[in-house]
Length: 144
Image (cartoon, rainbow, N blue to C red; front, side):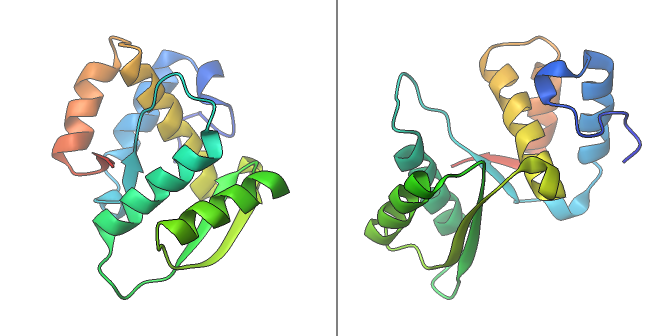
């Protein structure tokens, strides 16, 4: 993509570049039914809630014949153990759970950007209102 976003964090990107980035994303047909999110309030149970959201997304996307690889931005060993335990409780079949830095993966950079965008949707940023409707209509983002 030639949007100018590069590897910058969403918070640090100006709104003109954000809009250009989102316009480009909406054209990517492979993103249909690919981005799931959930919002939670006033909780410090990050790893458990992340696991729960992963489980909801996997179950919404797949039937019974699946195995997933879970990659979480900046996941440490303790958090990985919690995620592993929670996914087992939720009966989610996974091949691997690992942490990675967003610089290492275009998919994590996409996830980070979408998380930043969705946070701004939740916060009521004016520019997001039209985009979220378009993303939902195109089935790119789905609340898990």
